[in-house]
Length: 283
Image 1 (cartoon, one colour):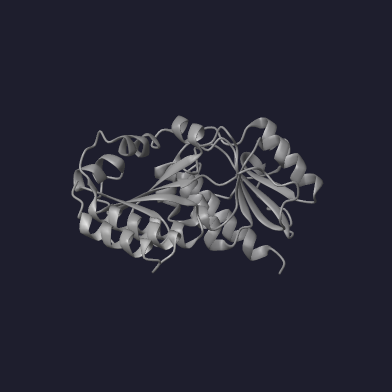
Image 2 (tube, rainbow, N blue to C red):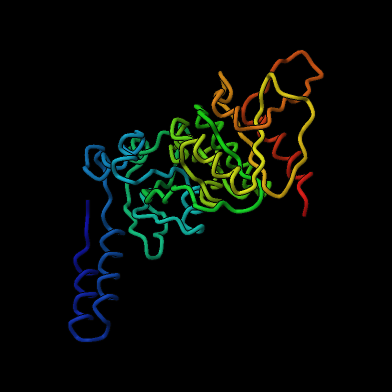
């Protein structure tokens, strides 16, 4: 790490002479500090703490998550996510109002799990995912025991694109804020509400508020029920579908198949169903 003390002294001198206030002096001091310091060791404590957020347990314990990649970091910042620290390769432009820590290429590779090279990573506060007392009108996508974070992120992205009111995730599903889930969502995680709650409890609450719940089921009807302005689409796990307890709270629907395949990938089925429901939903 290298640091030019002349730059620091100029900011401190300006403050002592009364040319700038304390907050501005501190901002300049931190800016100079962050621009001149480059972390080159993978064993640095801040790097180890950021890398630990690859693990779900660390994310739960700290209330933080790791964002990987230039587009995702910039989109999270633009969407108002509470980003605490941005890790950037040397030469990147610092983010206004957000601590920017510069790292070497090898350190960036150690932080990120993505195979493609990244210029930016960030540590952000995980938003409150508590379920609301009253759900918003529209289409709500509910994910029951969905295990693949890639599928979960893809469904989030599709729900965002089609104008869903939010996504409800059961606690035993994949983590929406895992690096893989965030990459698959391509920023949509920060665009619409994501709630985490017990599936049967929340479906009962939704039904009490006038929502019709529909789930994909191999023993369901091939006729889709009437669609209103309060609809829940429930998507089950990739291998087992929705649980019987969840299915009992839903109208079961089996999508007609013209070919020989018996089922669809969860994210593909969700996309087709969301498009169909949104097209039929009253204005």
